[in-house]
Image 1 (tube, rainbow, N blue to C red):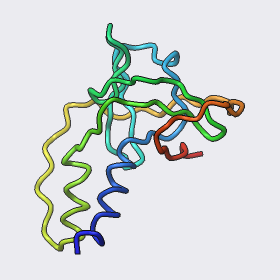
Image 2 (cartoon, rainbow, N blue to C red):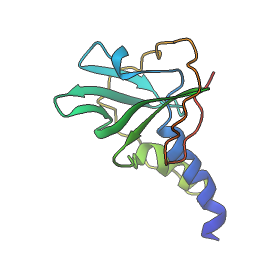
Image 3 (cartoon, one colour):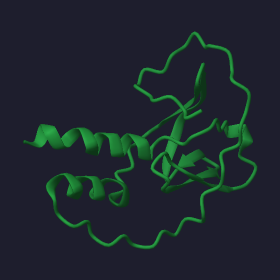
Image 4 (cartoon, one colour):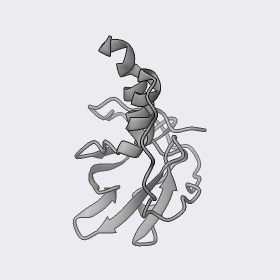
Length: 132
């Protein structure tokens, strides 16, 4: 029975890690940039001395341009309970717990850029295309 419920949870986790539009690290002009994920949930891009963080996860390979967007490889998965628990409880029929208020500022629109040419180097991880 778990296998039937796994797909919506996986989709929820993945869509939380995707931001519509095309944001390159050079576009980040402020220390913190709030944006909205595909789930319309707030995430924060933050410039630090160690590099750029996606909700606390370090971007280890930034700005991998593809024909339909840009990919940033991060060093961990953010299993945000606000993003995953509602999907899990919907599939089980339970009421989701009350969401705690977010400390992140209101999401901003992602900056738009013209599409880039294909790259020969494809990332080793599976990624989803940016919304267009």
